[in-house]
Image (cartoon, rainbow over all chains, first blue to last red; front, side, top):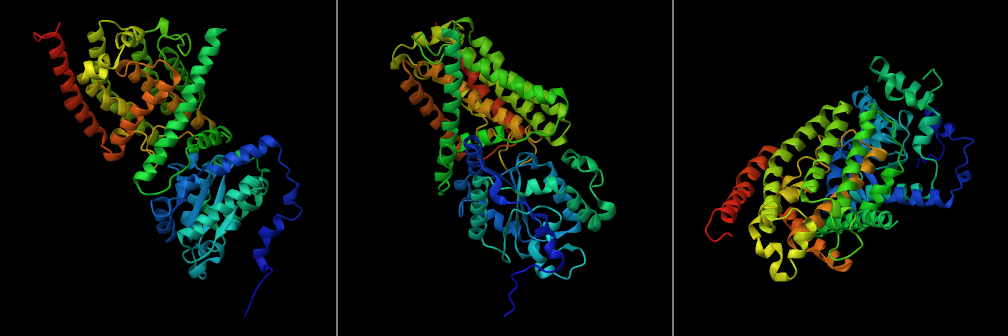
Length: 210
Length: 303
């Protein structure tokens, strides 16, 4: 059976970004550790229901699976959200909206990508207007794979994210801030004329060429 | 020195009671819906997390000062409500204020909200503020009429004198003046953003609320003032109708009993639309209040 441990082709690009970044070199002081612990206790979720994954968010948030016991509740607007859940495939039109929503969120912010479609396109692998690999356009922190993943899988993804936050590791929003040019170039390549206006991200202080 | 310590203690107590009561409310809500729910500390976690978030957006100075005005309103309201009776502590500046001043301070919050959200220019926020002010029109008339009934009954505006008049259970306002309590109870739930009348905040589902444009630290400030203001109003109703509290434990018990009553009412009734809420306030509590005034002033058995 074909089993691939290494990336191939353009899939290697996000990995190359992290070269030279040692995840262990962020030692937290006691205050930072307390703040990180508080942050992982309370995650407000902006559920971006693009594909069928939106269906899985409802049982997660309501009585059956009850995400509120982990401190995870829905946020009404991007301004108040900590976690952006991209639940399913992204068409080019929705990608533009997701980027604007993500850039409106206040830091620290995290992205959870839900389902196979966000990893490699899934069943839309040969579609002409579906984004195949979300990580090229937005920094994804946690992938939850499956088609569709059940709410239990999503809860496990959230718990993994909480552990990463508590450890104070470098998260996606750091990467987005540092490599904004690379992300913006990728976005421009697929969006072209539909690129969101500059003022949604100019506070990232990009190097002028974004 | 005593005044400073006393004020700090009142502000701290109202904050701690606020997040514990709301944490309890969320867990109570969860158990009614047959799920586990968050821990009782969840509101503290949410609030502190917002204080440690970044705040990158700005809509001019008023957007920043609006939450500060609301916060100042909450602080002063807390300081003008006496928490205990016959005690030197937890009085704040209540000796220099009275019920009429407190009525004025209760309106500072919605006005600050309108200023801040109006300057943000977000149409959904303005929609929320419009709903809030419409609901305020509905709830204020019966609420103030109920407070007027209490002042009429005791012939004073001083919260201290009203507390002193209720020296034992038989003289508690809830027994001597049940009409005023019934008139105040439902508008009181609305001022706390309780469930049948919570269309303004519309906690999670509707993005059109006054807070739509706030994230990060300013939202933390708004959450804090909301919790403190709720405790101030709870303690005010305890002072007026449940005879105040001799010591801190009794204060917590009485405030919690009242909170449990309002929470149970909130749990059962679904949300009303804004105009439904205003219709309701101007029919049921206001009608009851007018009957109460007639009974208290003109009927032969009234003194």
